[in-house]
Amino acid sequence: MKMDIVREHLEELGLSEVLRVLESRLEQAAKGDWSYLELVERLLTEEVAARRERSLQTRTRLARIPVLKHLEDFDFDAQPGVDRQQIHELATLTFLDRRDNVCFLGPPGVGKSHLAIGLALRALEEGYTAYFTTLDRLVQDLRQAQERGTWEKRLRVYVKPRLLVLDEIGYLPLDREAGNWLFQLVSRRYEQGSTLLTSNKSYGDWGTFLGDPVLATAILDRLLHHSVTVNIRGESYRLRNRRKAGMATVPPHPTDGGDAG
Ligand code: ADP
Ligand code: MG
Image 1 (cartoon, rainbow, N blue to C red):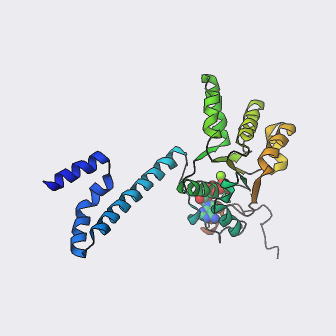
Image 2: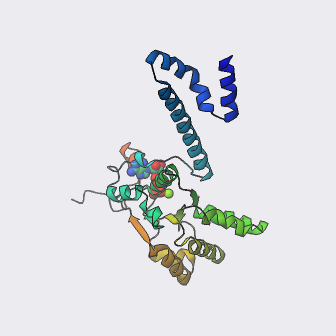
Image 3: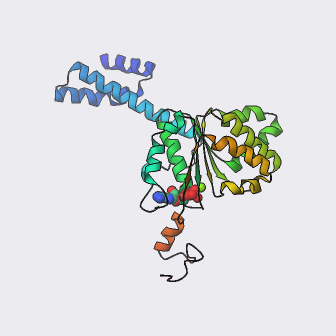
């Protein structure tokens, strides 16, 4: 039968979406009086869309995005400390074309990781390569690679992507070796790709968590040469929600205890 032959061909060609929708589209075409061209166009459009979606999912997995946090899910009204315009500008991804870096600075819970992941997802959607890691995980990973003698090869995983998200810089102090690795990574990515980092520390504190002010200056010099810094002030989104639900036992700021007005 003709239909069996068509199915076999679609299978061999790997046109799985066309295979899946063929029968119902043929019916629709008959009912709706579609032209031949219209039928072909619809089938191929569906195949292409399904492939793009699959590819995006695979690339998102390979990018090690930990949770799907989209920019669309970010509530700007809940976080007046974030400049909506600035995030919209970043979402155009022109910073990737300029190889600029982006730094989200601010206290815990204000949405730094959410925004970083949102931008990484946007980059993946637009076909750029991206990779997500926390600084802590990066160091652990490179340490393991060093023991196995694959340090160089492993570093390339972090050097290559057009966008590297380095989350949670400064939460844990780095030893001398790890500090040097960070320097090498930042140097190799300099003007090659964009690094997006988040930190709860201001730049002035980098000397302390790196244990070496000279190294901190060298890293920041390369990192900040072409960069955008987004300072997020405000209270933790998590705390805020718990407070709203009447569950928080601590005020958002130690000084917020009473009616100061
Ligand atoms: P940070 O990285 O600054 O510590 P996160 O980005 O991890 O904070 O935010 C903590 C949690 O609160 C996450 O689940 C995040 O999705 C959510 N969140 C933070 N700010 C917002 C916001 N303005 N709108 C929606 N969700 C938010
Ligand atoms: Mg975070």
